[in-house]
Image (cartoon, rainbow, N blue to C red; front, side):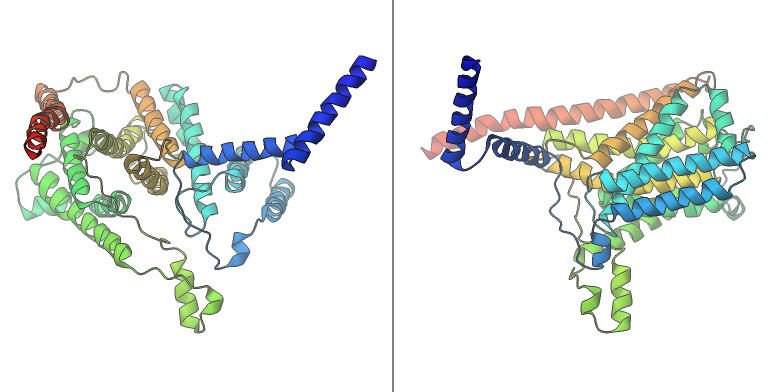
Length: 439
């Protein structure tokens, strides 16, 4: 007992000595060390130096208890006033409640992303929606193709039937009658889609490379999807030079406007006129600042590889929707397809910003959550397509398609070898000779 008491006295004396030495307890020092470690971890991830907007202060203070009260009040209303005998309706309301809870938890607990407009909480909710969509895809991946088609009838009972695929390559003579017959709602979809992609990519050259690459992909996959079988003028005149050009042009003009715009943010209370207050409220839904994406793929090999990966992900996001709607029997104009495209646009905006930060900033050692989640989503969609496509697309790839893409990959590999291996080695003797002559 005396030995134990003496040991305790010694420990207490050592503790008092440490406290007297630096004025901090062991617990405080450990807390400081943990805080410094957390800060170092945060610095290793994409960090965007943007402060909260003081405008509309009410929305920038924690409202977790208020949100919880509203959420529970909504659940109470649904639980008391929804007909309990309708099992299908109860299931749908239950799923809506589940998704609502998860999005609210995401808004409250997730970290801020790269954007702060219209509010950081909005983009935390977008990340929560991406996680929910990924969880649904993972569940779908473990189902059979027939079960997957039946799951689609849960959202719309009219689904679950074979769809007639329309071919656009039957009448390829360049006449006004054929051209007008090929114009439908998807012409507008092309322009709107490339307008959105221009806002995501923010680079003229890359937009045009991807526009041409997608048309080449349509040529290559026409034996799988009949609606990819288009006339030459549909590919290059109607799509690339008309619809895609219009979307890219308008989208890049928007980018130039945000790039040149002077961002001076005043609080609504500081603005005197009613018109000014309304204009400032509308400006809350525009970017707080604008970052121009300078991809520079030939600067170093990491840039080149990152450029190729980004292009592949964009094409994957484009092609996945065509295969999914074909395999799950969903019409192209169905709200499910439009919802998927709209969600992917929202997911892509912060993801592209985080990808560019990881791509261009040497200090960024970890990919952001939005970007990581979107890549996982696209790859999960691809796995579903690979699984459900078994027995569907029996026709092999044409020899011309295999040869063409083999040449493309060979050209990419040859260019990277020449640009990043051969040229630097050729420049080394010249630089050494110049150095020797200087001395």
